[in-house]
Image (cartoon, rainbow, N blue to C red; front, top):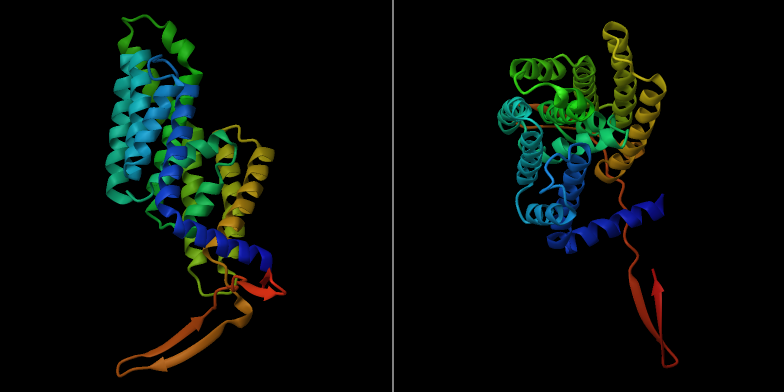
Length: 314
C-alpha cells in the first residue's frame, strides 16, 4: 500500500508540473476516441469519415473548452445523418437540441460524462458511469448521464436499422419520421437504462455523503447491487432482453474501476477518525474528522564518499 501511495504522490506531482501539456492531450484523446466511434457506427458522409479529418477536428478540440468537444461530436453525428437521410437529420437534430437545453441548464460541467458514456457502452462497461458520478458528481449529473445514454442509443438505432430505413421510398417521409421517433422514444431498453443509472447515481451520492465509516465503499456496493436489480426488474416488466451475466460482469468491472477512482479521490484512514465538539455564542458543533491517508515522498540525498558521488533515498 505504501508503494501505491508513493506512486499516487508522484502522479499528482507530475500532473501539477505538466498540467499545461497533459490537459490538452487528454482533450485530444477524448475527442479522437469519440469521433472515431461516431464514424465507425455511422460513416455515411465520406468527407468526414477519414482519419486526417478526425485528427484535425480532435486537435482543434484540444485547445478549446470541454463543451466544444460535445458540440463537435454532435456536429459529426448531424453531418452523417444528413448524408444518410434528411428525416434522420431533422429528428436527431431536434433530440440533440432538447438534450443541449437540458445539459447546459443543469450540468454544463459534466462534459466528460456525456462523451464517456457512449464510449463505456462500446467497451461493455457502462455501469461505471453512474457509480463514478455518484461518488464525484451531484444529483444533477443524472442529466448528463441521460444525455450520454440517449446519444448512444440514437447512434446505435440508426446504425442497426440503416438498411430498413434506406430501402424505404423517398415518398414515405411520414413513415420515416414515425419509424425514427418510435425507435427512439419507444426504446424500452434505453428508458430502463436511464432509470437504472439515475437511481444508482442518486443512491450512491446519498450514501457517500453520510458520516458513517467506509461510506464510499458502502455506496459503491449498494449502487452496484441496486443497478443490477433495477435492470433485471425492467427486463421482467418490459422484456428488454438484458443479459444477466453481462450485467453482473460489467457491474463487477465497474466496481473495481470505481475502487481505483476512490483511491485517487477519497483515500482516508477511518482507524484514526476523531469526533470533535466545540461551541460558539450561538451553536454547539459536533464534528467527525477523518484524516486522509498520505505518505511522504522519499527524498534523494547526495553524499560524497572517497571522491565518488552516491545517491541514497531516505
